[in-house]
Length: 534
Image (cartoon, rainbow, N blue to C red; front, side, top):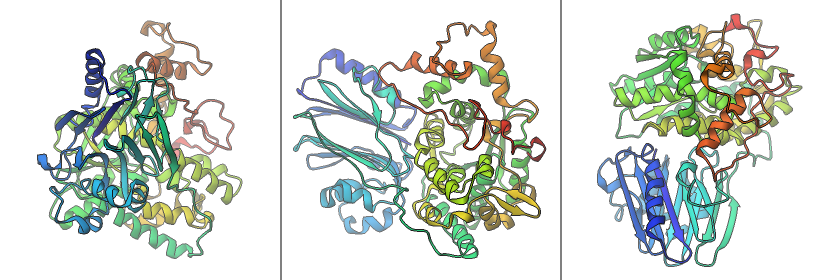
């Protein structure tokens, strides 16, 4: 992960006070890029970059990359870099996968460049001659970028906190798959365009179930392989659920080919149900397994830090982010691993949530799956980015691979809905079958258990501990503002607005479909949930 930052003055003037504030805000991105930083004034703009060095750890890979009067920064990974670089071999000065971008933008323009990329990215391109700035974001929104405008400034950064307090009244995320170009001397947005989307699928594939299953296996293995390029140590989060277990299994096998042993990481409270399954997987794949057991009291005390770090007040996101953030913090302090694989995106892509058992039909399940993928940047992808980047780690997401997503989205919807295996109905059956021989049976055929629930006991899930904590007068929660939600959601929103004044997002409450659950997003309240299966 890295942190990009720039602010362009429409008048070309920065007062001493504004520079002090800008510098203070820029430093808020240091957690994303603890290895190197650069901050420079170029024309009407102050450009800053906080670097976590992954590919080419030398200073040659430091950004921004300058080409003539243009400056380019990218927080991301370009997985088809080896194919793209051939045209520019004689002029590239580093082994950074991002250095090819300014040359491509100069040759093709930013829109065509983005269409040629296979990767995850947030790109900022500043042309000081044309006095334009362009921002681009990958189609899933794995890498974040925010921007805002005032009468005096146009600015952008990897996180909203770096813009908040700069008197930018309308801070917003750049939507996934979008490009925005702005003329900062004429105050004109040249364009806001969506150049790529997972929703642009017009037909259903005629590939058979058996061939689809084998293709999923091949594409996911390839997705892991292409994400293994790194000059830093690689690790993997392992919850004990199906998705992270599959990724860990593939990764361990690939590393063993090179004589290396994968390190896996699990987190849970002492009575966690996930921890047991994670141990089984670790033993099966022979990983160097590390467990971080946390106390409920400690986790509750860190919720405020998590709200600030994740920049959200969504209930299920905060519940899941708290143990994940603590785990990533622990990894950063105790291990050399900087590139961290995880299983985010599978449930959205493969109709994996328990509520899909209640879907009226395959087509409606497919439609909702597309909605979930399209909204990932507001929920699980946001969680994964902030929890890892907030602790100086790089997040890798094989289930969100471009080729895999395109294939699964176009696949016959009936292949994805819950189906029967040995008299039991399972979600993600096609994915389980594709990798069942790589995992212990109890894991391969374990019903879906949400991370925010299975990190704790099935008798008293994590969210119930939060409810008790928030409602306990002894914890000085009497100043919670009533925003019209539950006490828990009001608590998160109160904490959020304690730190964010200018950034005012509208975040829909994540809730399961086709279930009468009121305002409680936990899967443990669904009619299809059985605690004895988890």
